[in-house]
Image (tube, rainbow, N blue to C red; front, side, top):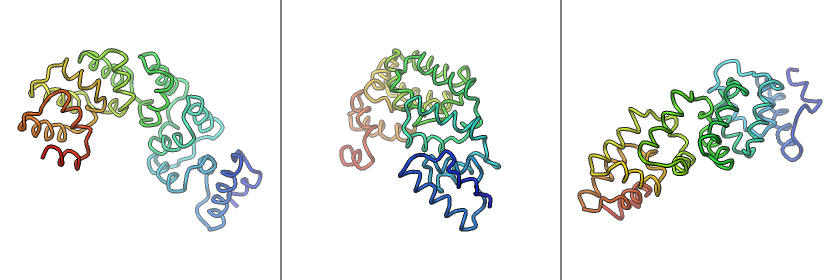
Length: 249
């Protein structure tokens, strides 16, 4: 059958993962499910569930069958070498299976090196890629560098920029003009100078990751009650809805 090559035990990891994965693959083959491609079977052997594999295939697009030896293995090994755990790699692959399309030497590795070059430390980079693997696909000129320059213009130094971006690497995916700048503009209209906004970001690095709607509503309530300060806004933005309501409404 289409899965007969599994009988030779190709690249299955050691027990107990190997046993559970090989059993799952064997069940799938014997149940009459569609034949697994080499790449699909390898990802199952790596520890992905069938549900995760389905998401990978749906997000990658049709004909998911990148070459295992030339593409899949080298990229998973690279992520391991960066410091990602197997669980983090599984989540990254599900979130961004297009990494199997991205060039390892000319795109993925240079993006990771760029993060180190601009001030991230070696412990931050794998966490950032695990949380937002799409970062590896972005243009340095169009996406990555402009965000760094903008944060610098707010008054953040290299260490605080690293703190903000390692806390919320998804910011690289946000539009400066449509998302991030309006939040700072709103804060400015409430009396916060760039220096004060930078101060809030130092204590609440996730601030820019919250929606403008959340920022507007909470800042307005604090302002009405006379509580709108750098400290209170940073604290209020981090609260759950229930916590904020109990304290301020």
